[in-house]
Image (cartoon, rainbow, N blue to C red; front, top):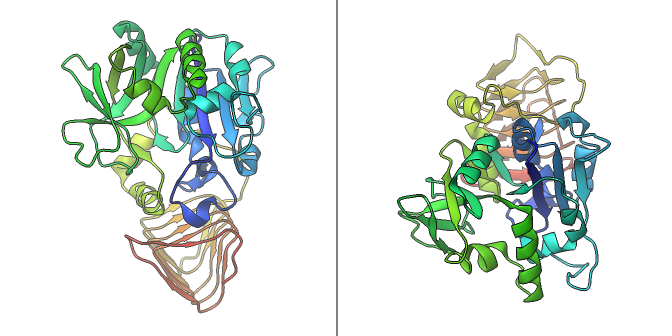
Amino acid sequence: MKGLHGIIFSYEKHNDLRDLTTNRMPASVPFGGRYRIIDFILSSMVNAGITDVGVVLQGNYQSLLDHLGSGKDWDLSRKHGGLRLLPPFSSEQVRGAGELRGKLEALAGVRSYLEGIRQTHVVLADSDLIINIPLQEVYQAHLASGADITAVCTSDVSGPGDSTYFRLDQEGRVTETLFPLNDPAGCRRALEIYVLSKELLLRLVDECISHDQTSFRGAVLQAKVAELHIQGFVWDGYAAQIRTLKGYYMHNMALLNPSVRREVFAPGRPIHTKERNDASTYADPAGTCCNCLVADGCTIEGTVENSILFRGVSVAKGAEVKDCILMQDVSISRDAVLHHVIADKNVSIGEGRTLMGHGEYPMAIAKGSKI
């Protein structure tokens, strides 16, 4: 899409993903058998024809760098434009060290990059969103409405506790921005996807940072709701913001539902990810594999039910795995029993071990652990 540039925010902020984010950013947490969380919003941009995407980084982002690389797997490895990884820059206006206080501070840190954007409009998005949205429709709706900012939101108000909410009038214009909110009835929940012009973005960044206002939500969406025309774009397709361990587990497990899979992996809008060449999965006829998502390169000789297995997982004979998420290259030894467990990459479970979590409180095992 020639008129639209993508910016994805992937910087340190509070989350409750616990052991899953000890060695990585939330954006690079594995999801759905072979993907990373950032793949979904990045693929939505690519599928909309966006050819230039900047990823604003800060914190423990080495894993994300390894995953994104040059952007080749998303067709974003280009001589001009393409994928740009934007680590924080020191400046007199922005604290070069420490946690960023908000989107505006993050944007101020890469202001020189913003000035060089070739497109007339920018779509801003968080990296912790599982969604497959036709962004070209959002952009066209933005142009048609004449709005200053178009905010993508959903009628499903049951999101994370730190969500932003909008009240919309009959024409879909945002009349009030609310947070925090104990009773969101009658509101729309923000999905943290915004479309606005490059010119307006630069003006907002300069104006707000000069007054030490760093929160896009507070300084723009709330404080300027009467001054700016902020238009809501209601998306009632599947959308999940991954900010808690329970939410991560629940939304992974939702992919076992065929109707959810059809929404997330919509025909014509593929989800791209970093390629890894593996052999086909082997399932022993004497074992059991029921209602599971299983990636390439797995070996299943035991019992696996209602679970998600990433690439290279092995489940030995006599082992029982139910309602679990096993990430890349996890090894489950003979006679081990796992229920409601999230095992990060390269975890090894010894012979005869029993690990029990609960659907409301899944057990998470840190990357590389041997139990």
